[in-house]
Length: 431
Image (cartoon, rainbow, N blue to C red; front, side):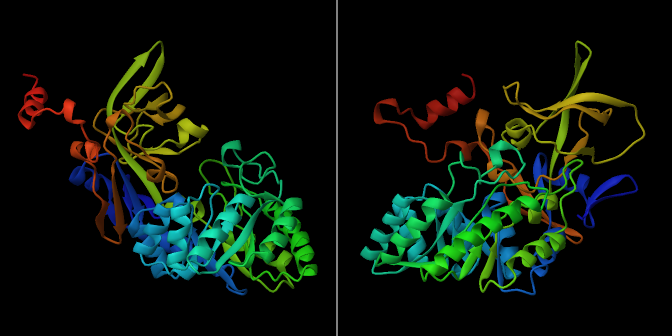
């Protein structure tokens, strides 16, 4: 459930009319509902309340500091995949002993930063990474807590770009090799084995792939038990999907019941890394119609948000529901909803049935809270857009819209290419 509903044909977020936000701050922008975020987290986390567990929000899904701060207030941890995500999580007040660091390409300085912060553990993804963590921890006179992220070779039945638990994927260590790596880790002076990690993909709408992966991990755990390796944490990752179109993902309660039944008898703390299921339907993208046109009988609705703002439709062919902010009884047409980017792949929807729209109207792209802003870019030198949080009857800007100066911040001219500030002004004026 979410808090984006029509009241007398006008779309609201909680008690705030979305059109009023658009008129106040301009478009496009991302809009999140605080109540929805908090409700989604509580529903997910409480589903596992009967067993020891830790809910670590997947920062890559949405890294806005206000979102992370809400997760911290609710007692959540963080799943991070870079030094930058770790910095954000700590800055937002998430306790380091609730932070798990995953990712195939951890750099030495990032590992050092995580050890200094004393995070809960690393999910190690390769033998060479394990060796590097051991060396850095030794130099720092620390013990690094680790889990090996294993690749169970499970088909999660999702888009191939977001499947992570198949043999051909870059993630994790194949289970047969993991036994040898755990034996090696057992002998490394600066390593403390804390757990096992496993993540099979994203936007998974069935429970069965999770259960298949868990069964394979349990076989590995039994093998490690024979080697007198104690597993304290079992990190099953995230990946539970949401409804974008016709999907019928399991309710977190049903997902939890299935996992807990399979976990019965295991003395471990379960770590979960939900992202999309928490924030996906808690956010929308609001954009304005710039123009409409018809080419060779094909209708186009041209809006001011592009693939640089929301890349999921272009990258994955993902479906995002689109609806007008102000509803009216009008003729329905089939149209492509496209942005201003100079790419034919710049679209938010293809051949979509939608009410006829006019220039200056606002539309809402639903289910845009996850992998929206976090995957955005400055392509075509477009400033990144604002983020807004609705909370009951008020709204707050939680990220300012970038300006043109932000686009060139950090860029430097070599001495022989420098031009005077006056020259820049002249060129800007077209003189």
